[in-house]
Image (cartoon, rainbow, N blue to C red; front, top):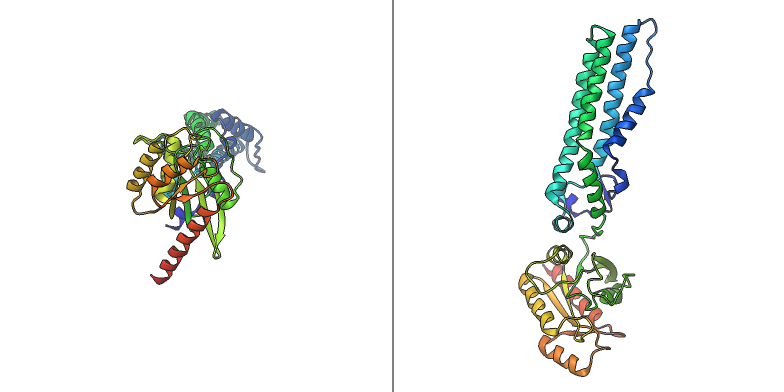
Length: 344
């Protein structure tokens, strides 16, 4: 489905959801009543009763239209979750309660339909009123029922406001581009690898778990745009937290090539054995994908640390300050992939 391959820079013709776009129910009602209080109606030659019916019908119509016009764009601020790319769905599941999000969006859409029905129902009733008092009571009844519908949305609107902030965490992904996904334990140097490959201006910090989101960068190879993703660090365990699930989603759905980064020094805080254990898990979980192993920080590691790492990783790529070994290896794999795709 073509829709599912779109990134989320723009959703439903608007920018990504903004928490400032979600008003409270009281705010919506105040705006609606202010609008109707300014309306007037006068039909030449008509008596007072006919003009009252015309005015009340107009108030019902305009109040209903106003609330509908506010609620529908709110629902459209979010993409249709079931039509999202599988990567985005997995990523959204890691940062939000998808079932609750769907339920609150459904409430928003259903309320829009209810208000539309009430608008037509009560605007018709106005004209059949026998007295002006009856005409006014119909307007009052419409306002009461409509207010009840909007007030019930107070909690869903507050929740959607918070969820809209989370949706802005979803990265913009080029689903057509060959994609290199950097993986490994925290603080092994994945963000440094991203900078070396693409020159992307990502933040580097000496503290574990610095990367909470997926950072991206691009470089060009043989007139093709190559996407590189720096993912949050993974730990060697079966149960993944929400931050780690973002990395798993990228590895599962986006990776053309997985680059697994190993730190042979003690700086990252994780022993080599733990990193190798995670590598084996990645190899098992993503056995169908090409995996390049990089021994990073060669400029900081001792000869003993490098010898130990290379002995246990076999044909790993050596990387460090001033080296371009990884870039050359990645380009070699991309060249082979492009050649194979042309012959198929």
